Length: 460
Image (cartoon, rainbow, N blue to C red; front, side):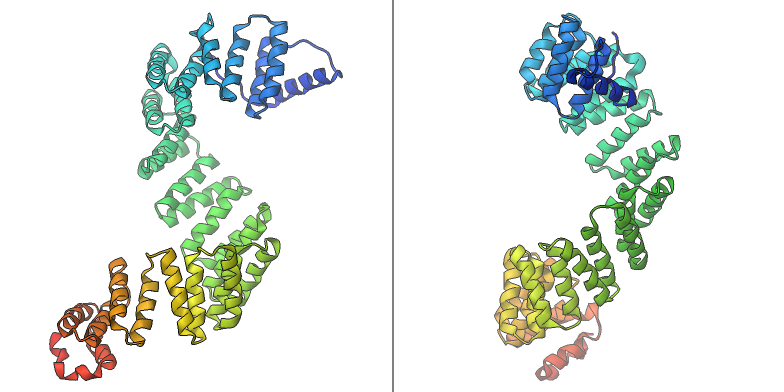
């Protein structure tokens, strides 16, 4: 079987396309052989210009009637336009049906037509016939399955190809990708390291390795990988932004700011980068600098929820509650279903001693996202202060169910039980609190001095 790989887009193919377009405009004359016409069609296919592909094909069949290679391109054009059935009819009638590209197209068409069994039979035959170049054949067939998001089949093919030739970098890239899609990050990391062993200066492999370490939250190793990628290509903007994110996760906010500034020089998304920089200054509690970057982002993109929220938080941290409320309200006009903004609004109300509205805002946040342990505890504390012990207990217990590591949660549950007249339950909860913090008895008695007669220190 004659193996015929797809045409790459290179300088030579671009020259052929230019010559063809000059021919169409009447500024040049000339003759195009079959291979040149195939190259032009592939160029337009990659650009999604299927109408131009058809024009080239019509010219080709005038110059080279009944040429099998050009008829194959007709099938490929039909496939690109979503008419898999017409593509199949053409391929099925071709005399040279065993041609490598024809078989690959048949496999793809059969999958599009939900005839997977026939496609797998053809795949197996192709792999058997092309056993001398098994790794590349497996790769080509795997590409088809990847196009269908069938990662399981693609993975089997790539593993088979890898067994035949363990030093095929193109295959290894796709193998690592499949492992990643299957959430098998450990194997994906191993494969990327194999690529790096073969090609130590492969920027893409170092970047991919960084992404994998980032996914499993091994941030120091992710940082090393991005640094290697940037050492190979200092203009690698993707590695630059990801390095900034890793530094942020490592609480290295000053270094993250420097990295984001470098990325900003490479990127056209300055307003988004300003938000990242602002968040770093916010973490450093340098709120005025944070606000200045949030404002830069807001000036460039006025409907910017993140910037509005960020300014609101910074003002909240500075106890500028009315000013904070202004920005939080603007953020909520953009997204009324943002639970976190309702929490910030509640905190601003608390700062202004407007507990009624604070409670309403907390309840709105919980209605949007019930899984907020801190917010449930805040509601419970308000209810406790208001001596609504039944309701307070309901929210404390709900908060504990979500996160039993909340500070003083067992203590507050104990206090609420006691205030509600449920002494036995109060003592059970207090024992749990003491196991966490042996100062719990003293704190309990500060909140419930009337319990002095219970000899609570005996619980320790």
